[in-house]
Image (cartoon, rainbow, N blue to C red; front, side):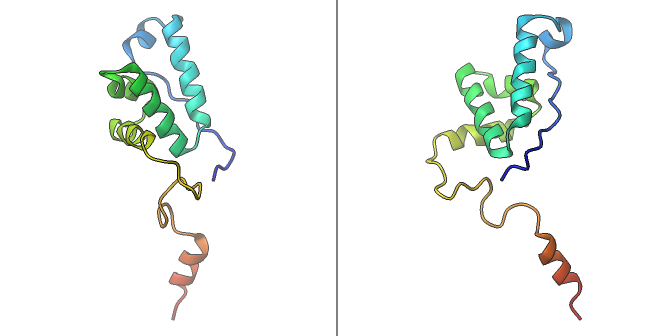
Amino acid sequence: MSTGRSHEPHRCQCFTCREQPDSDTAQQHRDINRLVATLDEKDRRLFVGFLARQHGRGGVAHFGRVTGLSRNTIRLGLAQLDLPPDPHGRIRRPGGGRPRVEKKARACCRP
């Protein structure tokens, strides 16, 4: 359930982007972060997990620096790449996320 809003792209913290901001690698990292900013949380995990898998050894730490995602989030994306897609199209497990506003309002107004 995407809201249609994108996040602000992350500024890469890798050595190459800090020392050579006009390099091809820095441009590639900016492009990755622009794309990641438009994805919902599940697609973000899967995409960065895919990139980390393609990179090989050290990919999780590398793309953690590039995208600003935690290593645990990227590892979760790697694990989710091997799972079949959710037939219901859910991003989170049932019950995950913030409570609905209506539910919170009813709970606080009980006598």
